[in-house]
Image 1 (cartoon, rainbow, N blue to C red):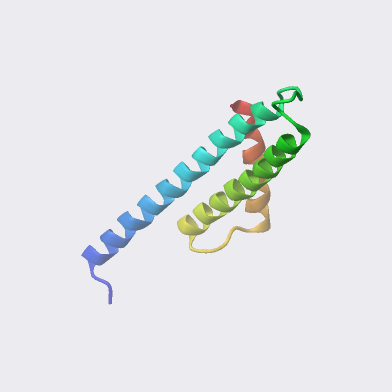
Image 2: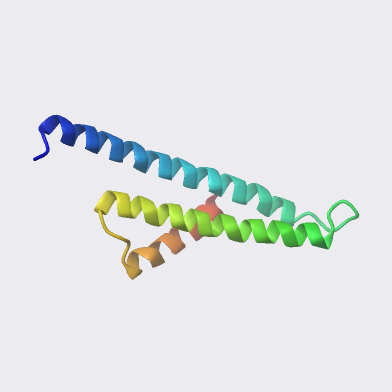
Length: 101
């Protein structure tokens, strides 16, 4: 049996984990937006095709990371993996967040 104190401690830890997931997702979005601006710089000798390709790869990785973090946040809040509808909502929220910044 879990005592009231243990339950409060677990709740506090879970809330902190959710905040950390949200902060990590926000940081990933900030990095994504900064790199997205780099991608918009015209190609020069400094900004080569190889560098643009690498930026695109990092952006793709950040998109996946943000989606995973959002899914883990849902799982932490609800105790179960996100439904297909929640996953679609997460994708739509990501697009909106990128457009806002």
